[in-house]
Image (cartoon, rainbow, N blue to C red; front, top):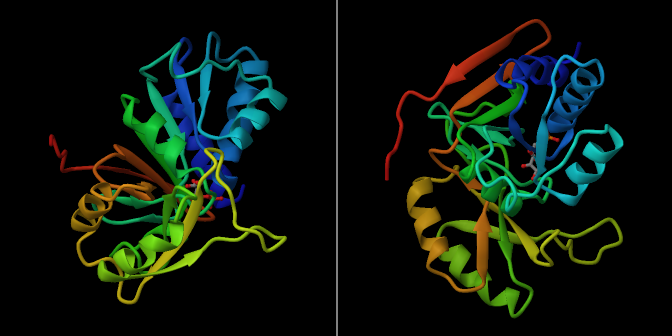
Length: 232
Ligand SMILES: O=C(CO)[C@H](O)[C@H](O)COP(=O)(O)O
């Protein structure tokens, strides 16, 4: 079993019959979708309804015959299981290299619990040291945000699809991937600043959101719980 599968299997411990489950996006989340689909098919879990976080996870869930529901119909998922690109010791995260950050954040913030599944390579001491920070921006005058992001210490690059055209999210926006030379010095400050800026839709910083992270290597799955709960 590879680390992503191992983490995904361990996440099944957080799912019970009757639950509404937020369905993450990415290769690790896909392992969870497979495990969930298998458990539903085998009758081990009943009355599960999934809330997809992207067109991709919606398509996969349909293929795997996971019953779906919208966040409007089921506004408070019991748990969301999702991957991440970086996880720091407080379980603060960078997400969005798969481009689904906005819907992932919407589903996660409405969920009672956010369980992150990842291989050990995603663990960092400081956010922004391994991954770039994705920022979703409306298409109109998107270049105008470049100096603003540089002032925050990030070097933004417009994400492109394989054909060279700008990558467009499920929500019709662009993404800038932002490199911070020595990591993000104060993620809360960066997140606050981004929120004040019209046209910047969302960032891949998921701060004080994850309740549990399951970190796997080739042999073990370690369950980490967030100790400090920010009640802002
Ligand atoms: O945030 C995400 C998508 O927007 C993914 O969860 C993140 O990129 C991790 O993906 P993977 O499991 O494929 O490494």
